Length: 181
Image (cartoon, rainbow, N blue to C red; front, side, top):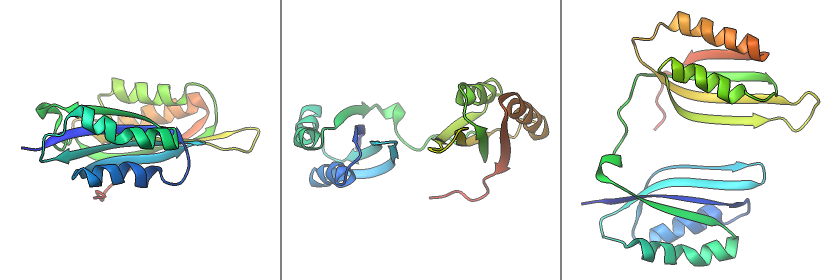
């Protein structure tokens, strides 16, 4: 039986964070299954799921991360995944990409995400970036979503375009034909 965990690690961006976190898991005999790792401005964030065939107590895992937390000034959090939280999530529709581009202003992420939520569309990934130049500062958001075949795509596109116009941004929807990994 596999025991599965999710670990998050946050700290000031610097060399060695990915090697440090993954090295600890490797030395403990763990297998990395899924991950997202990125720099946000000057901070670095890791979120990954790992498994082990041996029963590793949470205290041992936390103890293994302590030196890395202190050396790289990271905040590490562990969560054991229950059996019903394991495995690949059921695909809820066809994958699409939504891009948003325009002048930065409050509410862009919320208003687009709220429209998608009310439309029963599952958001699986979001990336946002704000330009460092300006004014005006430009905002880019890329969303990966799963859209059920029961959704009327032309009607959804019209609602997205109207939302983009209300926000003063360009908003586009396109199919993501190839699954990566």
